[in-house]
Length: 160
Image (cartoon, rainbow, N blue to C red; front, side, top):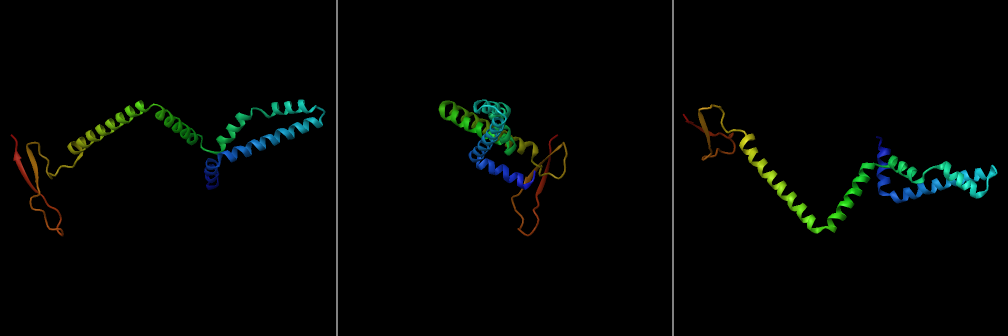
């Protein structure tokens, strides 16, 4: 997608009503020109107008097809869905409260479980040697000076 295409799509999002009015004006002009051509061919004004409308096709469908070419349909649909969702949540405050509390509890529980699993299973062991018959403990009672690299005193205790 070119930069010009991107700018045009953003422009349509910002000035949608004006763009649709321009499209309606252009479509009306095409119908009027078609009707005038048909009148010159011998039809009455009413017959020419009706024939021009039939030949032109479904105005609403043509507007929708043009709008789909001018912008991102998914973004427009997302905005409509979000507006509808907000209206429904405002209309049902008790349901909104239940939804918010359920999400808060679910997110909180998920974070707590992940934190525990991360510390227990995923955190690196302070031991440099891995042995099934010993337990390693990390002692940082005397921290090293800031200019020296960090060192740890390791104690091995036989379990069996």
